[in-house]
Length: 254
Image 1 (cartoon, rainbow, N blue to C red):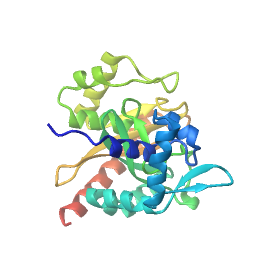
Image 2 (cartoon, helix red, strand yellow):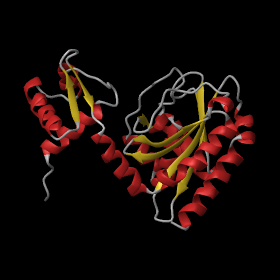
Image 3 (cartoon, rainbow, N blue to C red):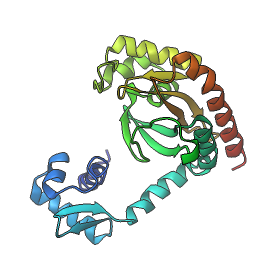
Image 4 (tube, rainbow, N blue to C red):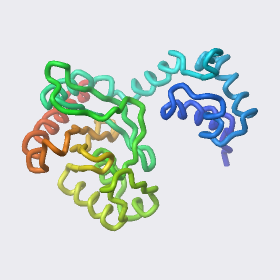
């Protein structure tokens, strides 16, 4: 049996903590990764020596250095789709006047690997403050639900083991109903969520499989005050599918 490398695991946990707190103190980091301050400090010093972090003596806070971007770029390059998808996604964002996300499933979370927002002159919708690298609970996102349905044959078993957090008063956390919603989304090929991640916001998503078998979710966000489900299906779904077809053709010649 291959044993896991605990030191590497802890170092990666520390780096991931910067997603939630961009410039944390030693105490904040140690608390988030469940380490003593002395142990956490040793890992931080190593990451500083390797060039991934820097420490602000005046503020007593840590921040990431640009070298971390090399890791992220390498990951995106290995995925292929996020690299070629940018211009096509930007076109879709401009046409909808909102934001377009590309995401992958990681356990019971989705990770945003691509994001484009409408240019200022075409911007019509209020958007959530999301960014590439952000992790979101899969159960309350359109992308997460279509990816679960596209990836896991036994949806009911997967949902039974998920962590379910109620992020808004309307977040669906009833497991049988959630499993049913995901199965139905898989059958029709798209999913719409409203007020699940945050009140006032919704998204429509479709699954996208690359020629190499990688599975992504392509989503368009909207404000629930301006768009009914019927209007979202009418206005956004055809554009989403058209964009997915474009990406498929691009990847076929890569």
